[in-house]
Amino acid sequence: MTEELILTKEQVESAKKDRSHVVVSILDSLGKPYWDNLLGTAAKYNGNSEKQKIYEAGVVPFAEQLEGGDFTLSPFDLISIWTRALEISPNSRYLRHSLSTAIACAYASNPIESEHWKHLFKKIQEDSRSLRAVAEKDKVNRKIFKARLKVIDKSLDDLDFYKTGTKEDIIELVRKMVAGDKEAGRRVQEIEEWKKEHEGYLIGEISENWANGASWMYSVLG
Image (cartoon, rainbow, N blue to C red):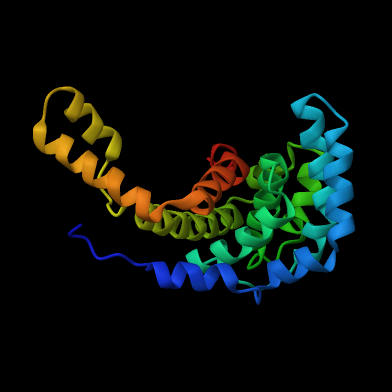
C-alpha cells in the first residue's frame, strides 16, 4: 500500500484496552444487571420494531447521563467505546444502533446553547419527528449540529482507511475488474489481503452500527 496509514495495529490494540472514556464510564455506571435486563426484555418480542422501541427507551437513561458532556470521538475513542459496547451487547445490533444514536446526539448538540437541541435523544425517542422539527426552526444551529456529525464521519473514514488500506473507490475497482481490467483485479486482491490482516470483527461492527444508528440524521437535516 502506498498511502500513509493514520492508525497502526498497535494503536488499535491499545485503544481496545482503554476504559478511560467518559462514554465507557457511563455505560458501566448503569451496571451489568441493567443492560442484561434490557436485553432480556427485548428478547421476549419477536418483531424487530418492537425490539427497537424497547432498546430506544432503555437507552434514554444512558443518553441523559451523556447530556452536556464534553467528550471527543476520535477513531481511538470509537474503538474503545465499541469494545465495551460489544461486551455489553454481543448479539444485538439494535441496542448498539440506539447507543450510537444517543452518543451522536449528545456529541453533535454539545456546543449548541439553545435548549431546543438539548436532551435530543430522549425527544426523538418520544417523537421521531423531533430532530426535523428543531432543525427546520433553527437553521443556524442545524449547521453546527451537522458539522459535528461530520467530525464523527471523519473518524469512521479513518477506521475504514485502516480496514482497507486505501482511499480508492473499491466498488469502482470491482466494476473494472469484472470488465476485465487486470490492474484493477490486482488492486482488489491486494485490498482483500490487507483486510484479512486489519479488518477484524470490531471495525466492521463500528461501521455497521454507526451507519444504521446515525447516518439517517443527514436526510433529516438536509
